[in-house]
Image 1 (cartoon, one colour):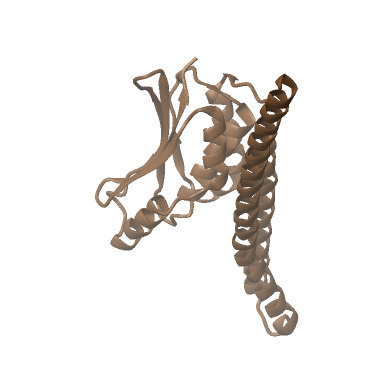
Image 2 (image 1 turned 30 degrees about the vertical axis):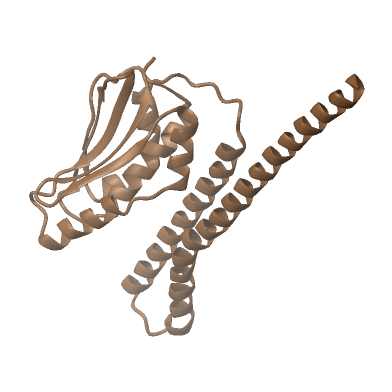
Length: 241
């Protein structure tokens, strides 16, 4: 009788384990569908631009001015860089989803931000964008390569707003419940109505599966705040050390 009870207990445990495996598989399939959609969405537009401009250069290079050809090449280069950034982000997304053993450590947030800004330095200098940041940062816990991607995603999104002058304020504060809040803000007081509307669309429509997965793994959150006449803000939180 004891052996029978033991066997039944084992069957119950195996059934529970099987259900957990099925649930994980279902989540994986859902993530895979979302991943495939993200790949297609993020790569289709820059690829279309590359194909369009290269086709134009092939068919009309003899009658196109040098200035227009250079403009086409610049557009192709920007689109290729966008595709490369998207591919790198998607590869990191796979790593974030699969990684279970990353242990958050105290961050040198100034260095993390500097790395993210260096990847956007060409755009920042070309458009003469002004960026301010604090001299000291809250001591938060995280994983530097992942947090760098969060900053890069925020700043890349804000740089979609084609406004001049453009001033981005990067900052942080210590919040309740042992959290640090980090943000990238833009004031739209000097923007045209069209630029204000674009900023609202950019901030309000910001969605990133990569940012969501990273902050979920690190015990943080992210969000957006926007209001015409005030500007917009993308922010995220991390645990304090």
